Image 1 (tube, rainbow, N blue to C red):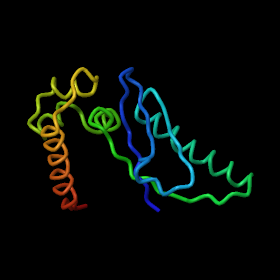
Image 2: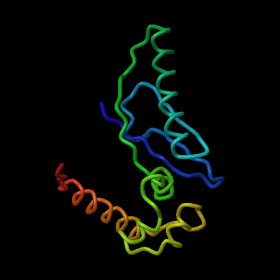
Image 3: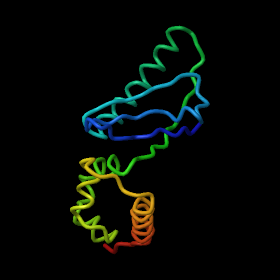
Image 4: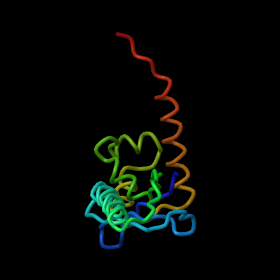
Length: 136
């Protein structure tokens, strides 16, 4: 079963991952926290494993799940910062690197229109990359 899990940056700069409670078809809940998006995702997976072990020890049914992670803009930029530089993302989206930096640090939040622009630019780039064929 696929379940949505949201990754968000908190006001204190930490990150959290949680299950969508409106769409939670699981018989349990889990969360993850960390100083970075990566740490929060790792903690979330660790919580999942611990919950699975707890249910097994109590002979309870445990609903297996695959998680589909959804990011807020700051969390996405943080998580993929080792792959996408802000300068490169700026060229890709047409959004100034300084503005993107404000989103990462939480000094500013992008408007819904800007979020859609970033998302569309990334999807278009991914579609372009998916067509690449390298020759040996």
